[in-house]
Amino acid sequence: MTETVDSGKIGGMFRALRSRNYRVFFMGQGISLIGTWMQQIAISWLIYRLTDSVFLLGAVTFANQIPSFLLGPFAGVLADKFNRHHVLLVTQFLSMLQAGTLATLVLTGTVQVWHVLTLMVVLGTINAFDVATRQAFVVQLVDKREDISNAIALNSSMFNMARLVGPSIAGILIAWVGEGVCILINAVSYLAVLASLLTLRLNPFVREIRQENMWTSLRQGFSYAFGFPPIRTLIIIVGLISLFGMPFSVMLPVFARDILHGGANTLGYLMGASGLGALSGALFLAQRKSVIGLGKVIVFTMTLFGTALMAFSFSTILWLSLVLMLFTGFGMIVTMASCNTLLQTLVDEDKRGRVMSLYATAFMGMAPLGSMLASAIAEQVGVAYTLLGCGLLCAVSVIPFAWNLKRLRLMVQPIYERLGIVPEIATGLRTATKLTGPPGKR
Image (cartoon, rainbow, N blue to C red; front, top):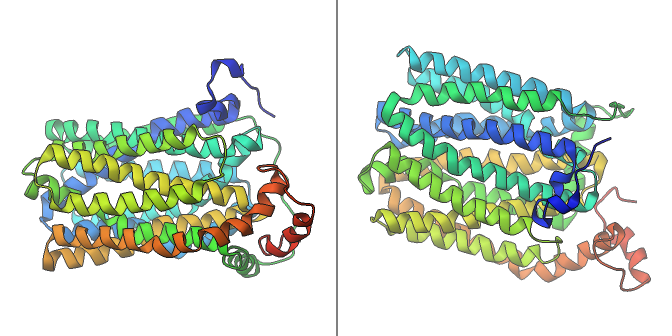
């Protein structure tokens, strides 16, 4: 299906790039993501410049991400039933149209807050289907199953390299030519990912004949994911991080302007520092050879993330805030990517789209609820105390996972043995697989 390049030219940290399809998709997606981060910074700065309202900053994030909460599970059914390649072509094209429309409004000086809110709902609806499909699609692009965890880590690296570069460029461009140019660049950047999708060499899609309707498929997906404690726990961790931790990015424009007394470039520096930390975390995961031990990593990095947020809430010095953003980015991305890697390893292929849609719902769907709640609280008690509470909740919420880690590890051990990730230590554990595998794995 795919060509490979000489493995000697690519170190173990980049081994997933040996697969041609993954390599092509990686490059196109990387270019597009830089534009995505530029647009995100531009919209945040635009809204705060127009309104001076922390609440409306949260409202924009809510409008962008609440569709994922409402539509994410249905998107997973779609990802399991239809050609994921074709679904991504449609979602990326629609995203380009959305960005082009918003850029036109901003560049012509006719943009109003309700325009931004409406277009964010449109983008969120598109992303609800795009994210779940893309998460499941990436696995199809990798030649060897053992390279899946590396591909997920490299995806995180790509995402956070863009998060490092995009905001830094956007901060300069906003101060120089305004927010509209950043959004226009994002619209044009979608051409790169569309081109990469069109040049993939994929096996012909064969639609699996299913008797069940959408509601039955949806119910089966929920039963499968939430009936097996390790999968359920990972999804809950992602949801808690998104609910309590992600609101920090919504409040960064306030910290940049009102607490650190800077401008759009300061916001770009803060986002860039967080991106650099996240990139370091993704590369840390990329060099790992196995998923073994990721549970302990999650406990450490989730605690680090919460602690760094609490410290950042007190900082009024730019250099110290940048250092703390490094730790925040590292802790957040390693936790999220580790959960993603473990989920992709544990799930059955025919239910991958539905499980990853639940991951996407927890990741992107809980964030708007947290952003609206945090923004409302910040209007009353201030952003510093609000972020302090967010960090504390993140650090505390990992305690139940740490307490049950040994029990969860025993449940996934037979699955790792069946997949060849760890050697079988006892013949009897084959039988145990039937008892501890995810529901439906019979």
